Length: 298
Image (cartoon, rainbow, N blue to C red):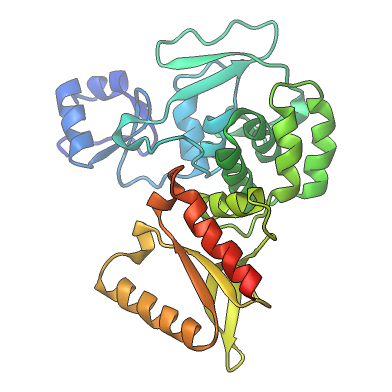
C-alpha cells in the first residue's frame, strides 16, 4: 500500500484526502488490503475487527441521535444475523432515532423512529447500540423463525444474558408486531448452539414434534471427553450432525470425520448427517423422518 492508512475505520472521502483515489481504494478492497465494513466505510486489513472498531465505523455515518438496532446491532455485538454474507459489499446500515429527532439523512443509511428507553442501549465506540438482550428480542420479532432463533442463540452465547432477563423484558413487547413468534421462541433459546445451522436443525426437530435433543454433547472415551456431537439423544444413542463446508472439507477433515463416524457406529450410535442442501424445503422431511424412525427403534 503506497498510502499510510489510519488504524481505524475511514470513509472514501478521508481516503481521498490521504491520496487514495476511489479507483485505488476499490483495487485495495479487491486485493484484500482494505476491508469494507459498512456501506461507504472501510478499514485496513491489518486492523482487527472488534465490536469497538465496528461501532467506530458506524460513528462515521450515523446520526448522534440514532440508536443502532436489529441486525447491525447484532453485528457490532459479534453476531452475524444478516440473511446473506455481505462480503466485500459491506454491512447494510439500518438505524433508528428516538422520537422527536429527525432520521439520519444519508443515502447509505436506512431506518426510522423507535421508542427506546435508556436501559435499552449501551455505548460502544461512541455509538448507541441496543443491548444484546434488547437486540435479541427485537430480532425474535423481526426475522423468520429459524433465523430469529439462531440470532438469539448466538447473542446469548456471546454476551451471556439470561432467560430470566429476557422474560422480564418481554412484558414490554405486548402488542408489538412479531411478539407471538417471540413468545414461542424464547423458551427454546440455547446458548450451547455453536452455529446458525445447528439452531435451524434443533428448531426443525422441535417443529416436527420430536423430543428436544442435547446440543454439544460430549462422549467420553476412558473418562476423557473425545467426541462432541452437535445434537444428541444420549440414552437412545442417536446423534444429528451438521456437515458444514467450513470444518468438514479437505483430506484431513474427511479422514477425521470417517474415523469419528466409524467409532460412533461401532459403539452403537446412529448418526444422521445433515448438509446445507438438507435445509431446502423438499429435503428437510427426509432427515427428520430418518430421525423419527431411529427414535422409535430406540
